[in-house]
Length: 341
Image (tube, rainbow, N blue to C red):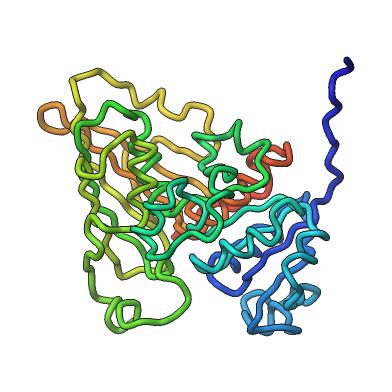
């Protein structure tokens, strides 16, 4: 029997974004505009139909051909090689179900990250409407699931806190007795809608913790690290800056073992092993900077930083797209050098 021929994907890819006007949708536009193998087909929003992207967001003026429509998701899917969903949690799950099988999907919400309906209800307060699709979704952490992502029809992009914590803990997967994590994130992580907690006069001079050991990204973290929930202390905090996450983890191994951090993530295009992690060194880029050092006793101290809107969201999603379509993984992403100072 002759070998099955692989389908050759024509370039450029027709790429669409459903829910374009939130922060992650806008960041997807910024990344895709410089991607050499992409044609942006649809940008959709219910609130801003028949506007240009520059009308709504003046920083994107000059890209006048990019119009926002309210085209129905099935039409978008049928005319696209891949669709990014930048919709709120709980909203995306029904749209995914409507277009599954019509195109390849990368969902930036949390609706398909977990494969357990009980855990989803516990952390998101809602029954999952389409549990049959949870088993079909591939968790989109490229550094761990690259082979599965290649053939995926539905990729669930990781949460920003979750991805950074997983990258920090993964080299010690299934060998951790406990981990204590403190993380501080910028205001863009709270999304576009204003609230008392994200209001600039309050946040500009403030640091506070929230959802201690209750954060929605915990199930993602413990699954990859091979931890039970009671072996993790996770303290997310909000900081007085716009972009980025700075995280520190204190790992107690189950038993003493030597490690060589120089071998961690060798060959990974967006993971940089550094002596000193600084948030300003990654902002605007798809890089994640990591540092490992010995603590007292057998403890290991890990520090990490990434841009929550790029590597923590849109950049990771485009990285997944590149893998899905057999493109060089860095395409359209390495040109996003960090913005410094």
